[in-house]
Length: 369
Image 1 (cartoon, one colour):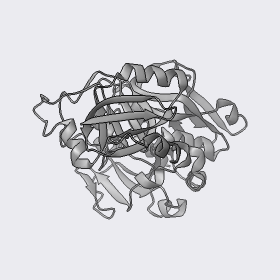
Image 2 (cartoon, one colour):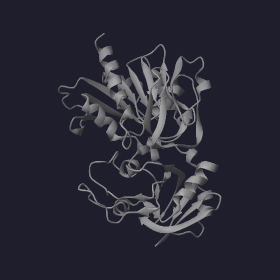
Image 3 (cartoon, helix red, strand yellow):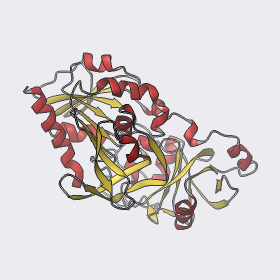
Image 4 (cartoon, helix red, strand yellow):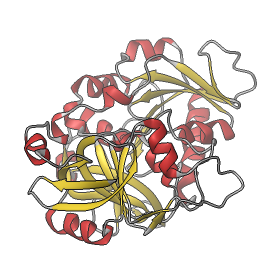
């Protein structure tokens, strides 16, 4: 069956159906990672988007039961050059195509993903429709909501609080055992590997919906607070920003990706939309404090305006070496800091895993006082 990718300017690409037949609309973005497609497809930060994979073959090691980063497929559509139909890996339980069909996700294969990526790099991200019924699709696309008009965090956050221990998800009231510390996680689009990395170093995570008040979070007496990654425009999240503002100074605080932007907003800074975002596993970041350079995994379409931080008490601590954008901040008078990239690196290099241990050190030091 044929499938069609139709951009908002009327440009049309024809390929073959991947996954379930149907029609879906979203913002077209590209990811440059060579591996990790299962983690990318289950990353909540891709909510509302159509993901173009720049690597020419996707699905060659199949889909397994262990590498899901959330409980569902998060992008609205998938665009690939070639989808492998005979994956080879001892953990593989199904193909990419069967996963998408099973979850009701429409994709397309056989497109020139290099041409689409070059177009996005030149013109910026754009809205598009992915459909098996092209008649009238452009009109339907132009009548739909734009990506920046939707608040995706509220659709991807957890419905109920829960905890994450050494064996994975558990009840909030479960025995804390011999954990070194417990942290509260404000779930704005959380990836499971963040919780796995904390559990691996002896931290129990208490996960709360993004709509949870600061008072409710603090009532559980966490030793530290994590602001998670997530999708969309942070400027649209005024209630969450207010919660973050009320949490600053209460416990050691650490933000990841969207969490970095929320911390910035909470102290009076601003964010802006990037032309085509940072999505991939090879973004170099320089630490302005120790001079080190780290190769990072990233997935975001917005960035912090460094000039807006003047007079807020926030200091820029890290910069992207590709385009000079802000990659980290810290509050000078509070125990709060954040980074714009993904230290859990699923997928991606492990260079920045040190930030989990660094945060735990801050939490333990605060507990001892």
